[in-house]
Image (cartoon, rainbow, N blue to C red; front, side, top):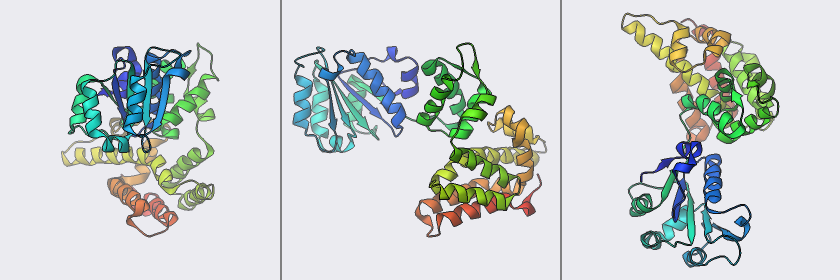
Length: 348
């Protein structure tokens, strides 16, 4: 059995039952948490979970101690044990041979779950666990798929209906962090009745921290050519303790779509065709609600020169903030804002 996507697993976990050895790997803690929750509930009932579940820290536990747990029946509770090793990458490195041998004849009395950051597919252990166990990859979706995920997660987890435009707005305000999105949906679920939808009006009123809203206000000001006002917003964010890398990440998704729309316009012109800014934005993944409200106007203000430079500017700013430059993070972000706000470089 090949590795299972966490998203397939979450939507219908009944298709994927827990095996004697399971691996959940990836860098999204929220998705991994829900995978663990479902696997645990498949193995243990709520009444016996306390007696039949054991957690180990991967950097300190010895293989012999794990082996004792998976082969010993609990004095109370379920006939099966649920043994989980958190942050198990170092544990796997130290005990790879033992784990490979264990997969040949795993204990029927327990489910052994390894939580990993990575699980290379070119290893013997990977092949054996895929063959005899269950491997779940907890990987975030591409940004363009996140609004659809929000609609589906709202219905699946919170039993609420979220309008697609509202989902797009949630993504724009919160970003691609599943955990933060889930928190906002939980809050919204308390604000509507069973017959009501989550709308853009409600999202605009209730979603997003002061910091996230300020970041998007900063971007709106920059795209309107109001450089000084945008930099003042930047100062507010930094003074409030916001991380410079985080600020750039919050606005990057929107700017990448503007860069893609600009490229569509330029490609069409090179082929002797024409595409409107609105149509280019829609093809780039911008929701119609935002196109009509502000994005088309912003793209026109941005202009083809800056639009074509956006991806390179974003990449350079990201690298500089992560150590490629010794410049102060504020200076790096201020330079980036000035570039996208410069009124001398408009026209599209």
